[in-house]
Length: 177
Length: 230
Image (cartoon, rainbow over all chains, first blue to last red):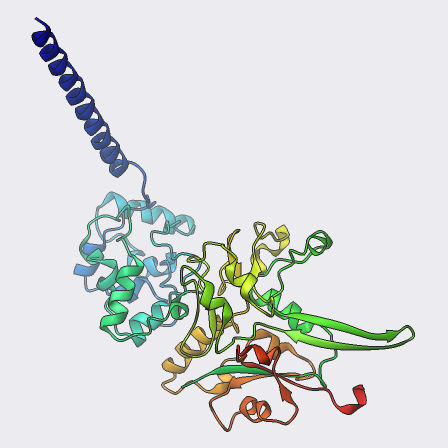
């Protein structure tokens, strides 16, 4: 009698434990899914990198500063108007851009990548002097049909590994300021 | 190999404090206030020590500008438990703020008391918001900071030299205090280059270093005042 009661209690506690773990697991999955769906950076115009790359536009054609400055530069409306003065297609996103062009208001492109305040990062140093391709850090952004919500993860470990491979300065204050 | 160092001619220093102001502006060091002064919490990477001798009106004032000594054998580095402060290959005693845990061992072990702890969150008047130097980070509360010989200027100078496809020249890189000194009391350059002004002055018979007997081997040299100072 006593042993069967013990057995029952054991099974019950196991069930409760299993139920709790399963629900916890579900909640975690739900949070992850919700986080990926919502949040992140939302651009005012869903810029299609792929279509621009397919039309023989290079990175420098729109991000015009990175060969001479520390930052790569957000494309100005003037850059867009160079091609989109007259409508080139029938996409909705282009229509949005046309609205900006007609009003003359700059597109408020949202910043995707942020360099930590204590890091000195210069695009010129990496692209021109180090001859590194944009894809090395930014991934296949040229093939994305819509703007990414999150940046490609960059860590100091990655930086230091690359510096090591290319025999670049790996001293702390070569980058930290 | 380059070994950056400084020579301070005490005969030329007029105690005008321009170096102090230049340093604060260049390196985003918050203002000193009377309240901070009373509590001995002022941060000033470059500070001019004033020594008053005699009694009024017969007084003599002597000035001693003190940046970080950038010792070759730095006592602060020896005690850092996390490697946040270290001697870099070019002779600069660096401080990596994001690595610092704020234990203040280094501040206490510096015989020159030239390392500063951020007791409070750095604050500037609203109007100053756009006047901060974007090349230098703002330090967070709870970390130690110090004179870096304006190494952010070295980072930029190196890049500029490489773009122009030439070697880094000595005059490409000078700290803000040296640049601003109106009487040219401060000289900066490569101590390992026998032809540089600093290495020439550092060998002068007037040259001495602070607390030399401790064996810290500072890379900031002083030139004594002439006999007229008494």
